[in-house]
Image 1 (tube, helix red, strand yellow):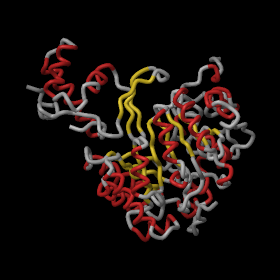
Image 2 (tube, chains in turn yellow, purple; image 1 turned 90 degrees about the horizontal axis):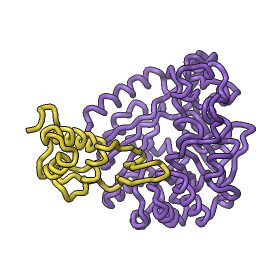
Image 3 (cartoon, chains in turn brown, purple; image 1 turned 60 degrees about the vertical axis):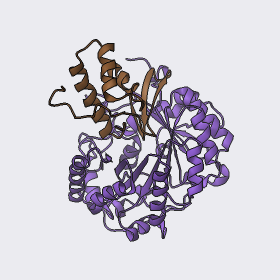
Image 4 (cartoon, one colour; image 1 turned 180 degrees about the vertical axis):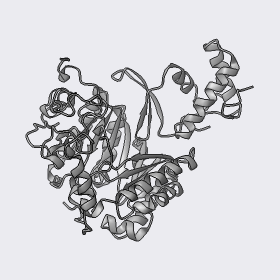
Length: 97
Length: 362
């Protein structure tokens, strides 16, 4: 169960970056950047861990399972955090669900 | 005193490559300078390719291929390919007139990441009148269709001024209908041709207020469907914009003939020594050219900027606007309410009378 405030995302959704959005590592800029149409974002460590799993291969449920292990945190809380971030990214056209 | 700015300038994020000043349209708000570069003075393909490599090495992440109309360059595919090979994100900023379906497909194959097409209005007759080009509106719609069919992301850019400001909502809906994922509602900024045409372009304060309210409401109703970014009109503002994110902090412009500028209009400031990519490496220009260091940081400031708590927030606003409206490029941007010229600015905006367009032409 997710917290009531978390956006609803289907467990079998396979989030992926759309064409025109690229996650790249840039040494000169000192780390990972998300490049999008006329916008640049610098993901924090948590957002980066999520974005790196949004390849279109893994399902939302699998991504949450994976992150719950990696961050040794309760699956419910991770699920809510990931759903919130994914919805926010989708609203900004940075992610397809 | 902090260390001199030139010891450690931040690395730029974006490069505006003005590939040519040639353009079939004549938009009266064009940000190009009044004194346009001729075709014979344009950089060649190999030099642009070198600029792309040097930009990437300097830390630039995105290149905005603009002009003029970049499609007027027959080597645009090669420039896109060189930019992608260097690792840059490539953004084509086009008037949408003169790029065929086949040409766009070739650009996509060369690695183009994104297309921004301008529209002048939501109504064809008005749009073509503003562009000074019959049939432009229909051709832009066709190009937008091609972009979407190729599955490239599309941004629609709409410059807002007196002739179209009442249809700002219709322009957002047009962008959505065209399949754009993003729309820029860019209120005209008064430089270059727009400054020359200010009397014909400046909307009334009440119109600006209504347009901002429409955009704010549509940002909520269209959430998830289209991203709405806006450039607010600054003549009626209380604080100045941090122009280009601060002089020599985030971006640089390369003109068709290779001059490297901190912003579109910087060449209007007298006495600045700009360097050219034909003679210097881009990294040297960024760190050491006198023009980039002239207004970098805060040491150059005079009052009211020098002691202002916001001096590292808005960097005194825009140097070019300060020059154009006060005669002194070091003065506070008169958009700021602390500028002694601020009251006069509002008066200037209010008192502008109707006038005919001076179309942008080479």
